[in-house]
Image 1: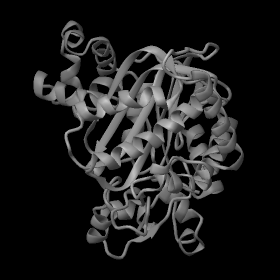
Image 2: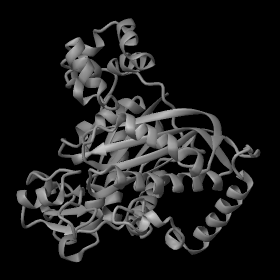
Image 3: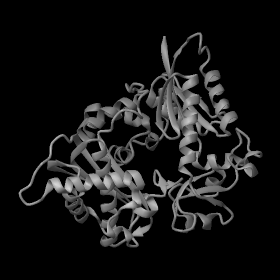
Image 4: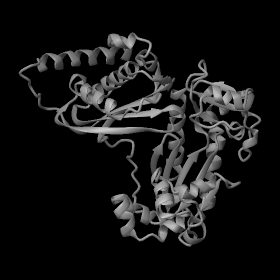
Length: 417
């Protein structure tokens, strides 16, 4: 008996949730007809033309609107588009209910993101005699219950299911099943840029190795890929041959993380160092608060800047000789990373991370600083914020125009509730 792996991907999830929840649109929609959707986008801040498009309906995408596009630019493409604010609480609640539906039909289930999930089932079996019929029932159930469309890819491992899912988006039925026999006839014909999970490595394969298709990648000796990409070379080689040994992880959202990070998208591009460092300080405060709450300290800090249109930037990290969960200790190293790697381009998103964690059951003392007093102060601030909210006590710099804390405290996951 073999196993079949599936990946469910909700179509334009945020935008579809908004359309499905509005009676003026919901009644006219049809499950397999994207053209019945209205022109609608979800924007991070509809009140500002500099806001970013978070999601767009299929009809809005056909009009030229793309995710991460500025709202002002989207309105130039399509002045009649309806713009709504994100409601993250609503999306998260809907996501949880959809995951429950998937798990009720396919108990071996792994949530992959807010709008994606893997599942697996034995085939052939009495419960699942026909895989296509089984997943079509899931697809129809999600539509009947939520009025949301989804695409489903099936294959003999998780990575191939993801690749089949990408093709399902172009299929009228929204379902694609790939077997091992489809590797040379279907997988290998796809562009190298269609290989899921590679990101910029696909550019290296294209320009350095001359690989135009996944089939071309499969012809590259594994040792050459290892020499260029290290461990990733083996992964790329396996994927190009349709092989993946990833296991299902039903507890994917419950296992402890190896690092803590926080990211925010800015309402406009920040060009001044004095503005960017305020955001860094606010994010670091939140990362350290979460570390203290988990009883952990870290000794590697990371800084990520994403530039205009969310299309380029950098992420760099520095390993320290000590563990800490105090902003006072970690902030200077983030400034060091900023000054070394920032090109001066406009910054549209900032992320701060702390990893290489260990349990914080010790306190590193200092001859030049009252560490114990600072530790007690942080604990009191944490208690106040936990009881009264993130913005109940803040640094004075957060009151400046560049400060994001007050606005961020009104949101969930970086977006309005």
